[in-house]
Image 1 (cartoon, rainbow, N blue to C red):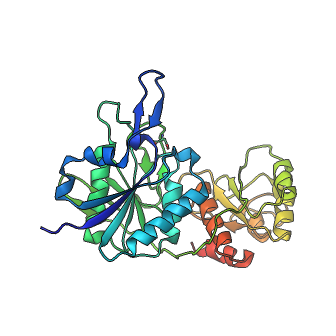
Image 2 (image 1 turned 30 degrees about the vertical axis):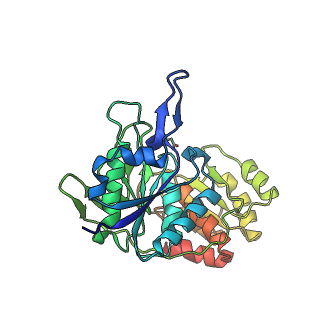
Image 3 (image 1 turned 120 degrees about the vertical axis):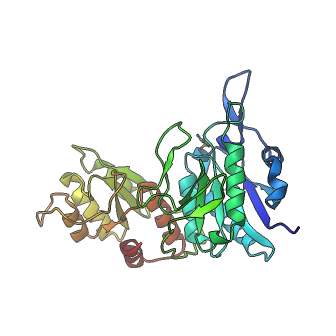
Length: 330
Ligand code: ASP
């Protein structure tokens, strides 16, 4: 029987980690071959080509490493004999790498990210099962045109919305806006949701200087002033509620906008859209005032995903005006 062919790229993280008995520290140690050997019936699902990539914990992933992974996935998917790409990754930042792939891999074939919460030295490690599930998703014909996904805990999430919500529980991932798009159980792969529009960006780099600033009650403009003076390329601000910030930082926000620096607003709320509701026509810091001041609302994007999008937009040479438009319809 001819089986579909899949490329599995491996990085680091819990899915590839063991506990060092001497130090008690958990570290990335498994090779791609070790990981695949833990999925005994793989030969009945797909023919797998393994590609070891940088074996770093995901908090050490850089935007450049993420872009390199996306480019590598794109190259593999342009081979006619490859049905899908699976990428093993740490859970901490997988949502960022997956979202960059979602925005940049121009292929109708799937890029399936997979991670784990229990390392290979623990009882009941979830990595081998998750890897098996991810390969099943990658070879399923219904996985076409969905962009990048994350498969963990028998659940399929679109890279667009998925986020890590719990520090240690295996059911840590959630998609606050609309829920997961499918599941992969003992019965099979099943889809019940869509991943939405996927405008493809073509960045040549993602090395913009784009910090994320979280607002807090009583905040003044000094942090934003520091970043304005250190020549940022863009700023993502995480405000509160439907998109509000302390009024005292509004003058600094206006100064950044006047310099032509994209200022993107997100919220610390887990769900819901941003909306320009509150304002005084002055300096209340309400969403209405912020939009008047030229801030872009990144509706339903977490701050970390808005930053990834902004890096990709800047790296693709988009103007501040085009960036504003992109966020208004994203
Ligand atoms: N806790 C992480 C994980 O689950 C470690 C990492 O992100 O590298 O993989």
